[in-house]
Image 1 (cartoon, one colour):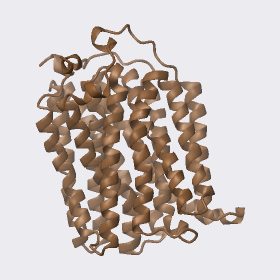
Image 2 (cartoon, rainbow, N blue to C red):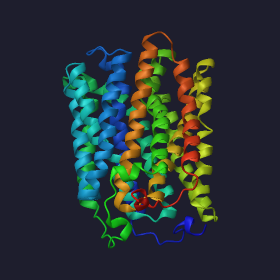
Image 3 (cartoon, one colour):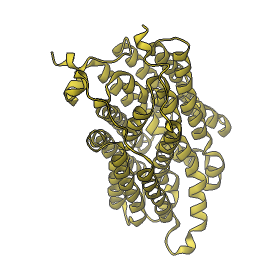
Image 4 (cartoon, helix red, strand yellow):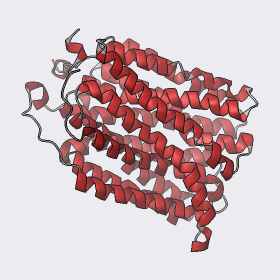
Length: 422
């Protein structure tokens, strides 16, 4: 049991927390970029007609390449290192974000979403790799919590920033929604320069016998524990991407939100998500510090996060927008706490040499869960079923994901990947 607790007293490398904050900024930019279309969609629709299923197609275009490149991004990082890999990834997705502002129709928007997914798919593998390089196991959940809070920072920034740009940019001679994409794309390019100047890949210790042999996708997927994490991410991110991409439209459709209300109220659930990111990582790290095993510390925190989610099924049955936002805030709190811990599991189970691949597999599973849920939502809404059944399904997915984790990973520990081939 002592071995399961890993290096709870390992020394923290210098500047580690500073690097975590810089990575947090990158993740914030990524969520700002992907939220530009959902929050600006009412203005985009004045130039480009977008129905529910067309919106689902745009979301799916992003998630398809995002999921595939999540895996490809892990491969890239394993080959060229975290410093160069993060620069390439950020520069690509920032240019892709800016390209939305040049779109003249739905086809061009689809191409831009595909390109944005290719770039952003490498973001979380790069973040996971940087945290694994800079932090011992006992501090990674807390560090990943800080990084994962960047998703909420970006999402909180999106409504007021987009509202400001939409209100102020018309005089520049283009439709104001186009400048939303140009400005957010420029922010990412500035970050890429900052990271390239700041970060240096640490020297790696000589490979052990375990790490010397390449760990292919076949080797990873041969373990039920890996398949369980990927499956849990598929389920839970199905709900998360539905909330992320459809909450603005739900508020516009159901409560008649205008952009001013979106700017003043729409950020609240995302702020709760940021608190959840940090709280879940802190809780898990505290449980480790108090002598619990990795298995207990991670699963207790995961279970508490999953318990926050089923309340969403009550949303269609309450009439107060304040209560609706409170329920979504609880769900967002639980979801991003869950996400922090799911992103930490690969660092508990897999050696550094294969970490990029497993992080990629986990992210790909989540993206394709988002595609399935998004397509189902678009179909249900266009066929008159409304939001109630969609929200009921979304509310159940984290509970199912937690059950899958418990069944497929009886004990969270370092895996013997070589045994999968014997």
